[in-house]
Amino acid sequence: MEAALYLIPVTLGGDDLSRVLPGYNHDVVCSIRHFIVENVRSARRFLKLVDKSVDIDSLTFRELNEHTDLTSISHYLDPLEKQGESIGIISEAGCPAVADPGAAVVEMAQRKGLRVVPLVGPSSIIMAVMASGFSGQSFAFNGYLPVKDGERVSRLRKLEGRAWSEDQTQLFIEAPYRNMKMFSAILSSCRGETRLCIAAGLTTGQEWVRTKKVSDWKKTPSPEIEGAISKIPAIFLLYRG
Image 1: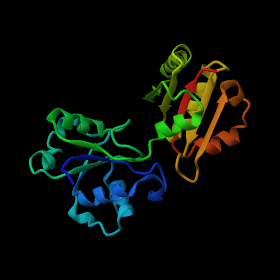
Image 2: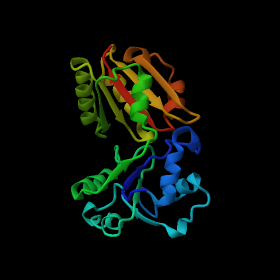
Image 3: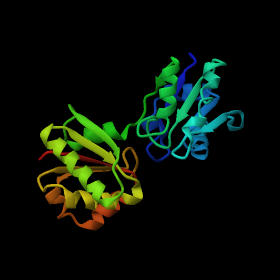
């Protein structure tokens, strides 16, 4: 296997790797000894799921998350750049470097001319578009929206406007504990004819995807909505009616 920076997807929840990760990933992961991870504890757990025989204590881990000072990561690629040894990036969920701090290391690797290899794995963004019934020809992922109410409403209306004027599906995410607040903001901010899809728990036993007009969502009993999206990760999509 050629030395490179390997972007290693993980599950979106649950422990059934066979459902979402190809066997090739197993071979790649087991050949790597250096990892850049969002959280060491969860990364170690994931590696043990990949192969119980992995000698965790022989591996090296460097954390890269929202609290990391990016001016301190210049040496993270040394094993690859100086020793010619592969490095793996592991996110907390899904694909590394997509709405993920790992993007900073990938950018650094590209600037240095190092080989970067993305591995196949689950992407909630793509799967949500697939299941929504919205346009897959043109869509935009907008990451996290502002937390402050006024800024969030303003952003939602801009995204809704783009969905209508550009015929473009708009996707965004929220921390699970704020999903209901996001849901309420959408209902109070968007026009009734705009369509909203909520895709929650993708690839897990709690998978739940629904698409309705905003006006119809307002008629949906709240227990059903809360039970579907309050405790598991969700992705929200807006599209014209």
